[in-house]
Length: 346
Image 1: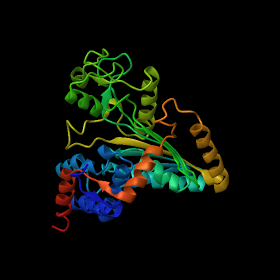
Image 2: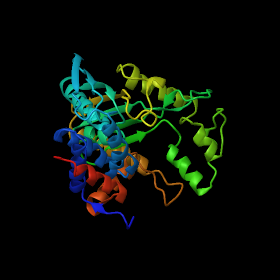
Image 3: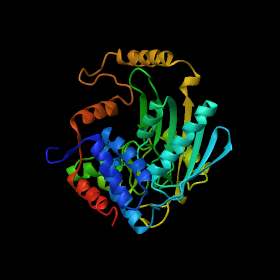
Image 4: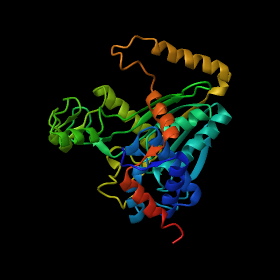
């Protein structure tokens, strides 16, 4: 950590926006993308933060993602929005869809936005945080490149699709749950292989669909979903909402950005929002949210060093610390950001 440069939130937002503008995005669009990725960094989700400039930047350069996307929004019903991302950068499409869902929810009490023609849109929690800051409870998800075999199957047919929930608290911390559909990310398996360690047998299978504790075999195989067959069903439902109903690609129709970086993925996302102002006053919601958290916090911890937490507390604590002390960024990522930013106006 000591060899990583530190940035304030404002400095990192500015650098990120200039980097994406240097890659050809209009200034306003670049700000949208930077906002989501910097929020991920603030939460401590550095693998989904501005480090994504590597994969996003490469695909922008080879034409796999459109820099000058013309995103459109249709309203087939009062509370429903259909967003066509025109193969734009995922966080940009995500922000358009979030704003569309918020607008619908303000008008109708609930709002649903289904997005298509998008790409990897970062983690869910930044969108849930923005929704909560505006008073909306949220259910948000996206589909993804296939990495998981269907339950009992022997090849990848569904993605490790993220799903998140958020509930605002006008006088405290919002509830923020952000999870993928696999027990662990591939990165944890790769790290175990580097350390020469075995892995639990519920993390992944080998190429033949058999559970394995060998990380090398696991990396050749498939991730296992959370909760066994129940997680499999949940992952399918996320893809049906994000991909099938949105008219985006789904299951094996989703192309791998690694194998085909120059081709559109047509990922889909969904945003389901509830305007909590329609349910009661801010003081009513704050009282209930704080009581909800207090009931959980009052449970005696099995391990005194690990007290009971409510989802989102770790990320929000990371954010408070980094807003105070600065955000540490990998030097290689800083160099890449600065290189793209230097292209602005050339």
